Image (cartoon, rainbow, N blue to C red; front, side, top):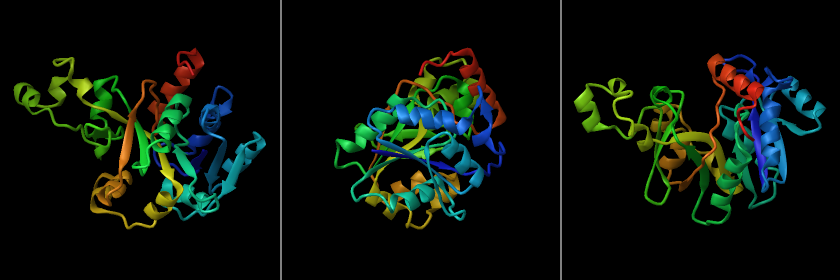
Length: 260
């Protein structure tokens, strides 16, 4: 299986985040190291449009490919690399800003598509650990059916707890009042495994209304009938989107609190 890490230099909320130093190493290289530890990953490629990222990865002895600067998403970037891969390859998209992602999360995501021919795309979800993440629109939520296939992804807290909100007045007011509420939700983990041919087809599809509304490209796949399997994982990760996220990751790694 081939892991591809899309890595662009530009970042609106946290400039140049992939090259920010964490414990003496750029953030991106922490992510790359985690991907290399996955037992069912045979090759890891960083797909970038920036010479600085390319140079850092190559200097570390790892594989990097320069891609077009015109891509609108990470999926588009990895699709350019996937075009040159063998037919029927399984490609896993590991987000470059997930330096704490567990190798076991990668392995479970790959196995979900590798051993089930009905799966077009596989991804992962984890428990919510705090109410702030539930309310944070930067943290994506996912709802699945009884077989673990995605029904919807959203930046809003879904499903909506009608009775609890009626009792407390608003979702914000429930904080601490209903201890079991967080167990009703699943946090989406930014990882996707694709069959190569489905990835190439997906990236040629037009953007959909739901995708443009929520700014979540996985909704394009759902709207076009894709079967997305969501595996539940136990080890949490942190997507580094803001300075607060970066500080959290830095603290975790510096204190060796996160067991890889």
